[in-house]
Length: 325
Image 1 (cartoon, helix red, strand yellow):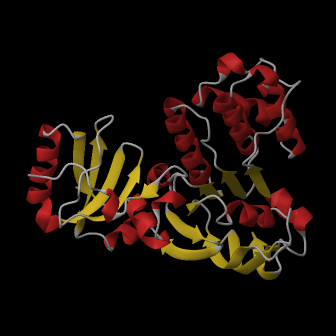
Image 2 (tube, helix red, strand yellow; image 1 turned 180 degrees about the horizontal axis):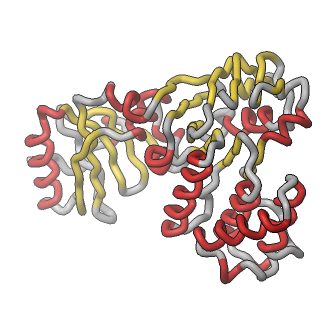
């Protein structure tokens, strides 16, 4: 394994335990997702891998090198896209990407070739010679990814790489993440975007308050919900949330979006019930589909607001609006 993390613990001043016995490993050619809410300990773990923080206990090895004892060597074998935007004011994307590539030891021809390929793949050509201070947040994020990928290490850490990126270029970015792994890197993807991660990762771990609560492939984790279907209701603007039918479970709400699960054997009744809500003007649209990784996440962490700050669990007593006929 290129990245091996064993029983890593990190406690900050004041007693906040950011990592609590984290163990995981990432192999060459693999995209490994590290999922969790804000404050779950994801970025702390990433910073320990690259030697910016020292764990209280446990071990980290990168391509056989002890990253705790030799953090300088760990940084040479890693490349990282940090969560915060990289400050490139006064530099153009072409200059910033090229500078990082040369600092990481790549030759000028290789840096030129690789930066041109990344720019074309992410549709960045029109911004290559624009001062960084004039770039949008999404373009800066893509430039930051290119800086990590122009001369990638054996381990590549991407901390929330799609923040601020528009939907079209997010798809292009995920393809480049996959290519990094296909070219032999071990990619550690730090994110709280469960829906996108499901399409990108080979394996993943879900962190909650510094501990790994679930680990496996997306398919294996969803297998436990094989008998459930995912019900999504989009409420009409201004409509009260409906009282849930008896077969509806694990109800959560995020704005006008209500998520729940129903037993697969109740699919016909669930569809009929949702259709009644639509005719009553309570629901704008609905869908029934197999359970997703988001459902696994909510089940493992136990709350929907861990995914989105504005999300909240709908208490049954709150759902006193329109009842299904």
